[in-house]
Image (cartoon, rainbow, N blue to C red; front, top):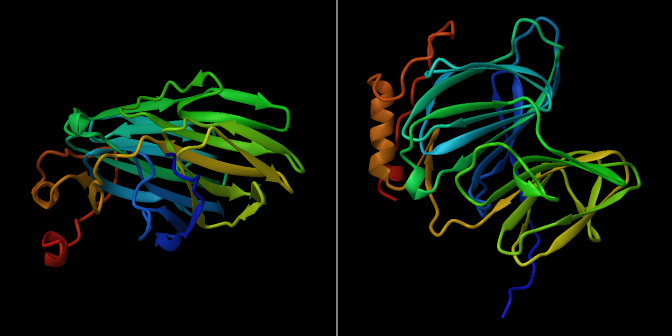
Length: 297
């Protein structure tokens, strides 16, 4: 017997990253993952002049992929592999941390004075958790024009268009644009769980308005869904096959045991494993203390 299709709305929380306000929609207390997706931050829009709104010092990652998707502006990426990439709006930076990598992200000196985007993480499956680190920059991604909107396929496949972005699990990530007073119908894989996050505008899912700063989880067992927009709107769709067991997350690490997370912290503090980001001018991040309450859970 099939489960009844789900619609759950979970409030995001706000935090600060330097001068930038962040809306963190995943993980939430009630929803830790959506398929392999385990982290979703929305930042901006920000307008600035001489400031440097994005200045994230070198920090480590393990057991995940970082998915940096820009809606407006520019970011420069540098990592401990020696990779450097200037990313513009509509482009994708995808970093596979695997067994360990460090990176930094900054607003470049030459910029448009605008910044708006998304930072997401994808948990790597067990068999790829310790893969060698990699970095990929994608200057363009597949787009599907619809009668009343457009779909950009960031990861995975939709409407027969497959993103070139490297993935290790069955997954979908897409930016959906809907014109004012328009509607779009999107096909879904029935065995994927999915979630929506409104980026701009006013959108209705069936008869249900989708509020801003909330993760709207729509579960599995759907073949398609319809979105309507009362003004020009953009929505993020994420999904994939549910993990058999939830992962553990602490700071910038994804793992399976508390011991491996503690070891990753120790390795970072002792300048082991993750390497150095030599292109960044300034000190790197210091790992927070790992509380004994986390280790004992």
